[in-house]
Length: 206
Image 1 (cartoon, rainbow, N blue to C red):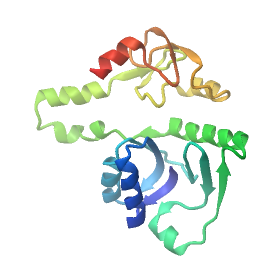
Image 2 (image 1 turned 60 degrees about the horizontal axis):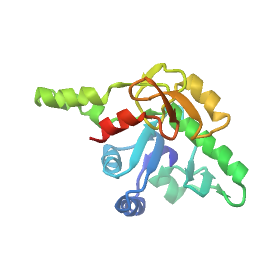
Image 3 (image 1 turned 180 degrees about the vertical axis):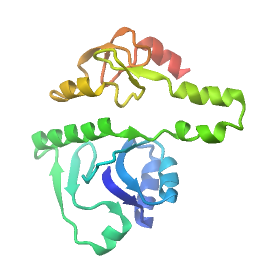
Image 4 (image 1 turned 90 degrees about the vertical axis):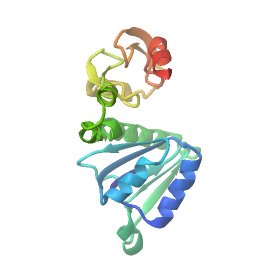
């Protein structure tokens, strides 16, 4: 879901709660969320990853087989008062156009700053135990670009640096073999789809 501005109406919240019950994998990219209540609601949705992008003006909603490019934000006022327009793209009907749009969406996610629940909680964790603070600091450990090995922010959804992502996006092959583990930075046979080496995967799974 890509929406410049977000203000959730009751119907949309109800629909998201239904998705929440299915533990569906979701991505949300936004420019501004209009109230803290909506952010608190979204944080409780299982499987959602939230990204902010300051200059975002696009609106697009897509799943694994259908996409809608539209003028409509997930904004309550717009849905009730504005005249909006959209175009539906079906992957089976136009796979080339769908894949091009999918690459653009991936690019926006890659540019966005991921909302970090643990990082936001650092200021409130000062009064907790030292152990709790160590856990939070550990969650902010650096990652490594899986193509060039450069140190970047750890995010398994964005395991490439900006420069290497531009090169990867030309072909958009999630199974293409890369060189470095996103977690430890050591040489390994990994891919955009599986950016962590087996050793780190076992360690993180514990």
